[in-house]
Image (cartoon, rainbow, N blue to C red; front, side):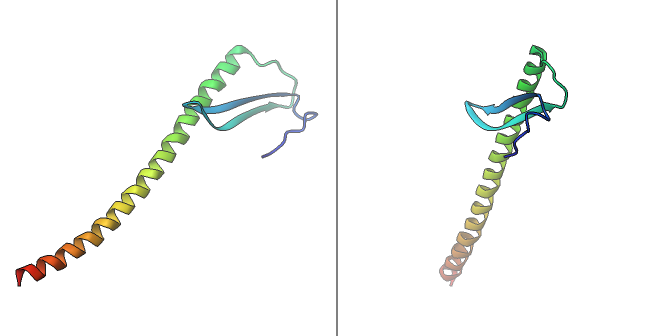
Length: 92
């Protein structure tokens, strides 16, 4: 985690990355010049934060699915070999 020195960044906005009531991170927007963020700024960054949180969740789910697919493929190969061996015994 990086701390922003208050004397260098007098204006900052921190937006949580929330998906289904779970926070996966934050976005920090900081300015070197003093500035009042508007409602539009906050709404825009909140929307961006939601989209990023969805993308993070999608990437997590994709990774899980790939892992499951790899495990199933390995299992299929093991079982196919076992059944081929049994089929050869049965045929003789």
